[in-house]
Structure formats: structure tokens, C-alpha cells
Image 1 (cartoon, chains in turn cyan, orange):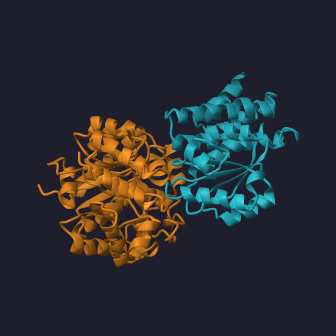
Image 2 (cartoon, chains in turn brown, purple; image 1 turned 180 degrees about the vertical axis):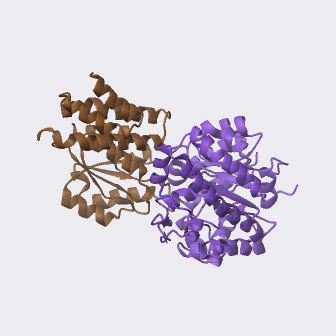
Image 3 (cartoon, chains in turn green, brown; image 1 turned 30 degrees about the vertical axis):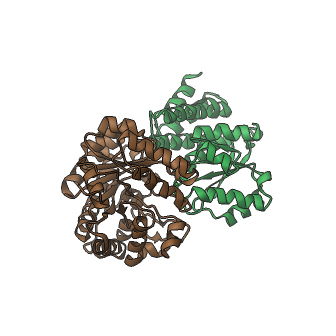
Length: 212
Length: 336
């Protein structure tokens, strides 16, 4: 790996948000392929960050700044991708369920999924089932990701999936769920297609669900 | 010692004499649809009207058999009094703050009439009603938000945590210190209104921040808070905090209300001699999704481990079955 690519990776891991765009520009000037900057610099760094988060070496404050650093890097490099390289791997709708306004986990998942090449439509927080159905019908996503932080709002996740089933939409979209109180067994019980414990797992799961 | 609900809770809080059985308590909300229906009081009325608030709290004792009554169901009472716009929700949803008035970390000033703001007054009045009804018989629990949680409300949680990630320590500490008087005033007023114990909830949760964040930013502030608020305080924080248990005892809290992710045996072994342990029946998989037998098993595990006051780990989902809450009571009534 070139020195500059390594420095890009290190900058994301160590949260050097003011350095990242200069490093990306330098890499491009050195003739490094934009796709390589993304795959071997930015995404590779977030894999390390995700692992450190899973291992409780770092927490949300550090994760947020690393994700922000990655995002700044992506903004510099994305316009330079060839058209076939910028084709999204799939479309994902994300939202936090009705009654829940917590969105940090969802936002981190969004940044990681975008970094991994998915097109993400973020429907925000306190998402009503009606809006969800309307957007699924309008966008036709490959995956729906639902988040809930509170044990008090978990039942909304179940209700949303039941409504999708009733409308005949559940078979048309893969559903993945996550959030602090959510577990694999809860995901199975409510009929979700998968559960991710953190943002790193969400990316792996999204790739598995649509086979990319 | 007579094994009355009040005596059992207060004695357990100070690791004193044991009565016939462990007490069952709720530092956080045990309101579910079944309880609302049983007592004829529903959300959002129970957030806004002192009599409704007190009636719903009493139902936790009279209908479910808990040894405590706790009338504050939201985490937004102080936030509303500090200028946040709060959506008080409905029967199926908990309240939430809608906008964050200090996203720019501008100075927060606690208003002079803070204790007279409707969202604070309602809790104080509900506590006084409870005092008149069950004072000395059942332990009355109040609840206040600590400055960290209030910081989330003022600046937005993600923004607040992002500033920590960016090492903007001065901004964070300034906001925390500006919010401390709200926590202190609210807690002292709740004791004066009739609370036997006040829960101080401060969501530096295990899933969001690390022990090093707690130690650097919040431990010194919590030491000052526990010194300034003289009455008995139970600290509530969510998530797996196994990495910082001793710090909660160091902070000077009388009790720690904890989640199932912290193993009861580990908590008892490490800090059980220094602080009252309260909890830690799992909400998501056991109380909400499980059977009474699952609840009973986990409650007995906590009792056998030496947890002092048994109860749900956090505010329960509104669709939790009442039989599951009663299963905690059944487990404690079997005694030690």
C-alpha cells in the first residue's frame, strides 16, 4: 500500500478530520485510482474503527468523528469515480421507528453503508408506518433498515413489519433491524430478515441480504 | 423491623436489617397499557395532571404490588422547563423533546421560576399527593435528570457526543456546569414535596460512552451533585457499565439502578458492599417478550446474587404484559 493510502487510512482511524481532504487530493495527484482510495483507504479504515467499537476500545464520540472524517474524504473522491464504479450496490431505506427520536446509531449505519457503496435514503426519526409504506412503494428499495433505541419503542418495529406484511410489501424488500435493545431473537420473532449488532455488522448483513 | 413496603425499601437502600423478603421497586416507569386500563388513567394525561400522575403511580403499588411509587414517567420534565419544546406523546408513545435550543452550545440559564414551570410543578404536586396517601407506608420515589442527559436535550445527543469526540472539553464542561443547578433544585424540591428517595438519571450509557469519558467529564460533577443533594439518591444509567461500577460508588450515590447487561453477581461482588443495587430484570427479552416463568427465573437470580431491591432494569415497553410485572412481585414474596 502506498504511503498516502496508509496515511488516509490512519487519518480516518485517528480522526484527523482537518487533514483528510488534503491527503485525498495528494493521493489523486499521485495517480492512485479513486476506487482504491475508497476501498483501501476510507472503507478499510472504517472496518478497523468498527472493530475497535465492537471491542469497546472506542465509543460513539470517537466513532462519530471517524465517520465524519470518512465522509469528508468520500466527498472529495466521489466526483472522480467512473460511472460504472459509482453505480450503487443497492438502495436502502433507513429510519427510526415511530415514537423514537434517537438517531445516532442509524446515522452511523447510514454513513457506513454509504461508504460501502449503497445508496441510502434516510427517512429520519419518529417514522410512521404510513410514511414508510408510501416511501417503499415510491422508491422500491432492496433493503429496509429499522432502528429503535428504547425498549419502550421496540413494539413499533413489530407493528411496522406487520403492516408491511398486510400490505403485501414484506416480500418485496429485505428487512434488517438494529438498536440497543434489539436482539437476534427479537428480529426473528417479528419476522425481520436480519439483525446487526452495530454499524459494521449492518454493512456485512446488507451485503449478504442482497448478495453483493 | 416490620416488613412494610416502606421499611423494606429504606432498609435495603442502606444495607440495613433484612425483613421477610427483598423489596420490589421501580426507579423508572412501570406503566404499561394494562396498568393504564386498570386504573383508568392514561398517557399523556399522566404526564400533565398531578392527580392523574399520582393515581397511575399508586396503581403500581395497589394493582401490581410494588413497594415503591414513582410518578415521573418521562425524561423530559426538566427539559420542558428549560425551554425545550416537548411532544407529550399519546397512550402509545412516550414524550420526546422536539428541538434543541442550545445546539450551538450557547449559555444555558436556569430560569428563576424553574420550580414553578408546569412540567416541574406537576411532579412536585404529584409527590405531595402520594405523600398524603401512602407516606410512611410505601417508599415514594422522585426522579430528576442529571446534567449529561439535560445536555442531550439542550444540544441534541449526536451533537453533544460529537463535541466530545472532537475533544471540545471546555464546551461540554461549561454546559454541564450550567445545567447542574437545575438538577440540584429539582431534586431538593422533590424531597421537600414528599419523596423518600430521588432517582438521578444521567445517560452516559455504556453503549454510548466509555468509562474514560465518565471519569473525565462526569465523575467530578456527580461527586458535587451527591454532596449538594443531601437526600438519598439512586443513580440510573442504562447499558453495560461493568467497566465503571466502582466509579458510581466513588461518586457518592446511595444506590445504582442497573441493566441486565451488568451481571448481578459481578455487581454485588465489586460494589455491593458500598452501594445499594437495584434492578436488573431484563426489559426487552424477558419482561416484554418473555413469560412469567422467565421473569420469575431472572428475578430469583438477582435475589440469589444479592441485589438489594428487585425491579425492571429501565422504563418498560408500554405493551409489557402485567402478568410479567406481577411475576417479579411473586418472586420476591418467596423471600430470600
